[in-house]
Length: 268
Image (cartoon, rainbow, N blue to C red):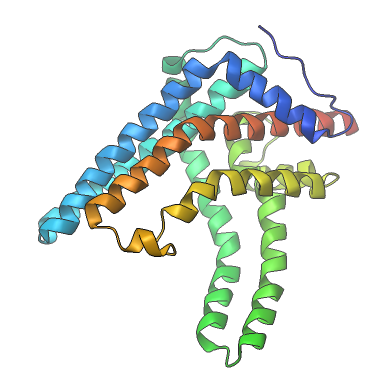
């Protein structure tokens, strides 16, 4: 069933959310399959991490668990790229299987990783400045004022460049892009005329996806009181909840991107 497209001439966030959830509903088997595989990788990584924590294993085991963590992280990223490929194809009415999308992800995964690294480097000065403020500010008032000063431009950068990693997947191979810098320029153009609507929508999604973390971090006193095993179990419960939430959020992000992309093409 082909999904009705939101109006590309003005950004209607409510309509985009509705279309995204409808897309999720029509393709839930495929999207949940990807999300469940990612969850299984999290379980494997958590088991090795727990063994390392309770056994006090030596340097050799530490190297092994680090290697496993890196491999797990790579496949998590590869599955995220696979998810984006599946959603974008299904939204455009194209039939694609998990195997086909996973195979296609080979062409985009390293570009996606590279784009994320550049994104982190862009944000790094703000993060370092914030850490410096936390450790050196002499008064609480000065500390919060300085943090507010760095938070505003940081949030701005996050919003205008947030579509760059996704663009590296969807725009891969298109002549319009000039290397990784082109993805950041495109992201900035997509956000340009709808900054506040996108900011509110993204903030809402971040709140929803991180809400379970309030109960599964060391900030929460009851979580700190748990044993290491129970902490790992609660962490996995959080990851299990995300199995169902993450595909919905990914659908919203991709549909929003594709809607804005068509809007930019129209404006040209």
